[in-house]
Image (cartoon, rainbow over all chains, first blue to last red; front, top):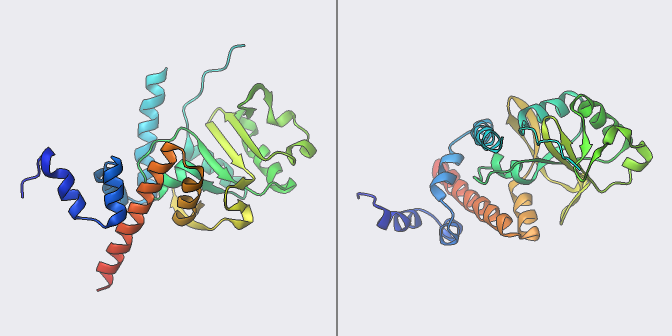
Length: 60
Length: 171
């Protein structure tokens, strides 16, 4: 199936249980969550460190 | 009064510094959520620690090179406080040159450091104690600010997803 913005939410819902669906219903982007879960804890922190670096650079 | 500009948050250096000094602590809060897979950005490092003289002495020694100041009283260094007084605190909100570090004696609704369930995670190559996902969900559900609800929902979804994956891999 070709994923489009219109059918993406339905596709994501069909792929999870009630907690997964509750997150989608609340507006959480579960694709980010799915990507994070595929990373190691250190890689999750490195990704966040890079976001922090950009955040503080922008504040300067 | 002029506040000093906030330096970039350096979580890796903070974790390394505390670990190298032998400080007993567990990562809690937003960074623990990140380590469990949540995606919400956080600009400080929260830890829980035993508030006894030995541990606080190690904490202060570790932070001494990084100008630890009370975040709520930017002119007041933690290093100038007598130990007897520090032992009375419920938490420290610390600005350092490595960024913000919040140290909690107790985590509601779980209790003090001894009551926390932690797991050991490899973080930056360091074996660090991190609050378990289930305990973190309890904390986030208890605090229940909008941003905590988002994290709780993410962690609950992650728990469900990983449970499913474990079931799949075991069949």
